[in-house]
Image (cartoon, rainbow, N blue to C red; front, side, top):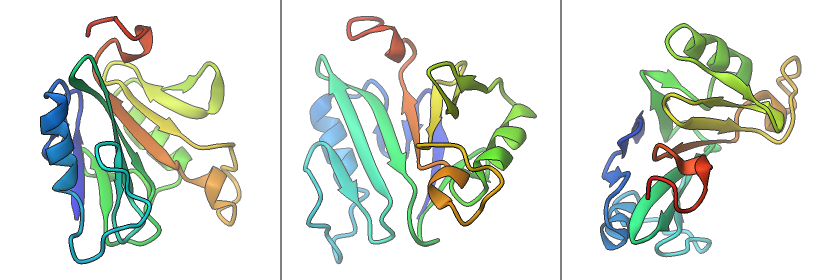
Length: 158
């Protein structure tokens, strides 16, 4: 399954700002009914057979954020403008995105990056840009798509 991020709107059936009940239903649409995961938490996250985890955050009755975690297999792809965010190295993702959008290192975590105009944020636990064998630092582990103002505090732009 290809999941194309559409900031600030959402991904697939998950749309930023939708009602919480609608978000729970939309999250379920990503589940593979033939292979449910024992680690799924209804209304919070699902894990696909590829190990791609999709989690949602709701506040004040509305979907505020969607986070997607790097799959272990190529069965699922997370894309932004056709760029596969989890098969390219973190460095390649940043360099490619910089041709189209503003992206900068996170001030609190320089191994991670944010595209502030889109409110896409990219996380990895540490930087290992020169060592592809160190997957946890070579690739991004997750990407978060959120509503404008998400990082301004719980009540901002709610």
